[in-house]
Length: 325
Ligand code: 5GP
Ligand code: MN
Image (cartoon, rainbow, N blue to C red; front, side):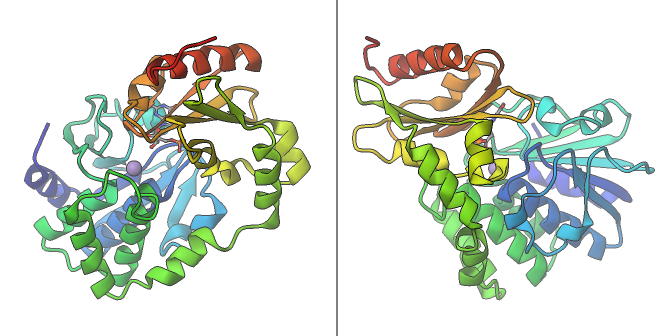
């Protein structure tokens, strides 16, 4: 583990930088990437940004998002590869994972507690609510004047990873950093509207169908929802529109663990866990090969849906101190 000053020096030495986040990019991985990439470009570095998966439409407003290259990393001479918000090499996605062993300097910036140790330089701060906070601190160390464009990206990273400043990953310093971003002119209300109030109707159609699948364990501590390809097809919603659905499962009184089972295009099941009690869902998802944070985690499983649900729900009920009937 390095300190941020080491990271700042390593970035200072870089000439040609490739930056990526994780598969199924979210507000933190994209916001952090664009904020950093745009700033490094202003410092005269050659910057390439991208990832294996496409950018969800709601992040289309982010400054610099047109620079994101989808798919395998573009061919190029890179001396430095910066990896953001990615706890395990597998979540880099195809093409990017291979970059780790290509001989370039790898800088790994993350905030996942169980983050795997990879990269030439590593800075992992589980106390950070978002990688965007780490980038903010890095800018200060590098004495970078944060541009409005980068500030918008950092605000987006922080607002999305804190659930609009609701989650317990918030620290007093999170608000201090955000206050500075607002002072730089970030139009917070406009960004929040882009993120949360510009949904296609299909998203609410999907919500209606998904709520119809809500199931509660007999102990009342675990609640889950299921989104199959069929429900996505009927509603006309896209995979990315399932974001946030799991919070409905968690929002019921007495529920400690909310779970969303989502069938992927490939026929596997993506499972999202959210905790609001004392259950560490990072540990829960790790039992099934996944990971994340104590209150938000995920994993992917293949097989028969009923079998998967039986395994996952039983483990969740046990973790929540309930009794499987
Ligand atoms: P979500 O449920 O929103 O997809 O993911 C919540 C958190 O869990 C993410 O911040 C991510 O860190 C983690 N996560 C989700 N899916 C996986 C997975 O398949 N493997 C690992 N290691 N972490 C995951
Ligand atoms: Mn994050």
